[in-house]
Length: 65
Image (tube, rainbow, N blue to C red; front, side):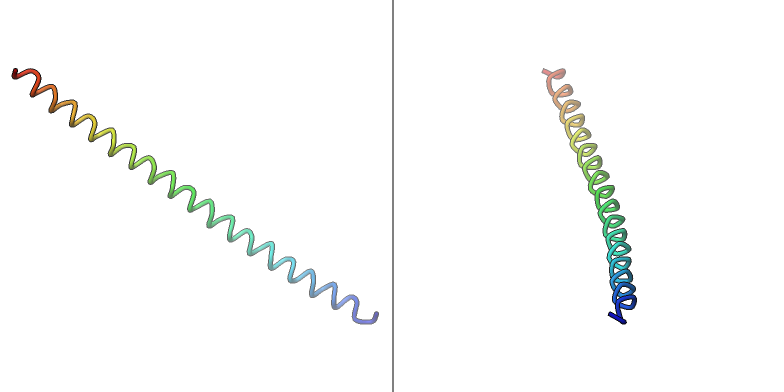
């Protein structure tokens, strides 16, 4: 029973290290989520641009007939 305070302190240190590690993981997941959202927006923008280009070409072809 004499080493009880030392065991509690070691447990508290490991617990704190785990909490700090989870914070780092959470931060990394938030950054990954932001990157995924940005990639989705870019892909959507490229798709819209392609559709706009097709629409313009169809208008040129249709207007010349």
